[in-house]
Length: 429
Image (tube, rainbow, N blue to C red; front, side):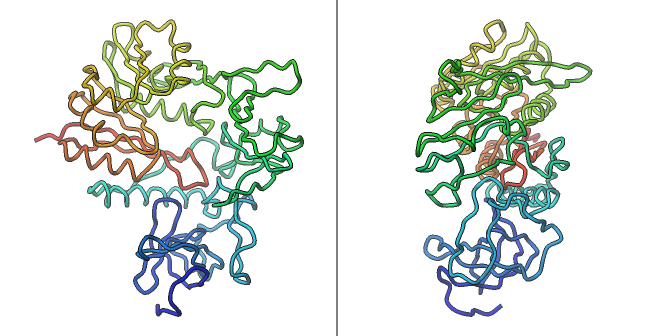
């Protein structure tokens, strides 16, 4: 396809989208120049307006403004304020979508195929391995709910008039909202959109399974009425199936602290970790980046009273909650420390299995070196970012370990985010 004019911000191009990229972009090319296109779908031909220039002009970013050849995976976006506006009449769109549903224009099966292709691509380019097709597993009920009403944790911004809403893409403004269909249905019981909040504040909302909803203003718990109890912690109940057994735990979690966002994610991930780890009674497991102890709890149940779980977490609020959760668990050791510093100091104990769920930045080469040096039977690595996960995969292989299993979970439906769980074991010579 020939060059119509030089690429520049505001220029519109007709592009054939023939690839996927991490971050929710489809990939097109203009005279050999890579263009990352928001709002398109691989396989489509679109009109796209250039919005940004990458470093040294090596690549560009663009927004879809019209679909010329439509993908069968394209659907009507379920939440208009989160949809990319179409139309070529203006040099720049009058409105930007709010965040939270960047793949809302893609069918759920199509989005899962997209995410699987991204994982494969990242493993090939950054992990330096070829991996077969990745099936991204759906969470229960998401297809029936069209991917909506799944999130139990949300954040809202407040505008100068005290109205709660969200910030549009790459904007400091606040778009007031009247509803939040990405959250579980219980959010409709809260007075979020029909009251005035402190101007320019941040609202954090938790909708837990085993206690009342929680709201914080700029990090401080809030409740209606002067006599309302300002609870800092909420309770979450998780029940999983392990073999013929059903195991249940209740957790205290800081209302502003980390907890898996999707309503079914805790159960999905715990069952996947238990299956992957395949611990036996009497084993010793290490749980790195353990948070309030979601995995720790169930690992400690499986290894039994003669086994042991060492859980390491840097966040003070999370470990404070974990101490409440495990005050009666004699086989759990809780360590409040930065995982990297523990590894660097050589203070990781020997273990049968290591489980880690690092933040979006990944574990990093030093941590991977430290845990492989323990020579556990296996390492179970959970990740929420395909790019940093792939870089960690490359380190495992450099150290003589191989990935023997990989699963992926669509616990962030209608977004580009995806969770992976991999098993690593020493290469057999």
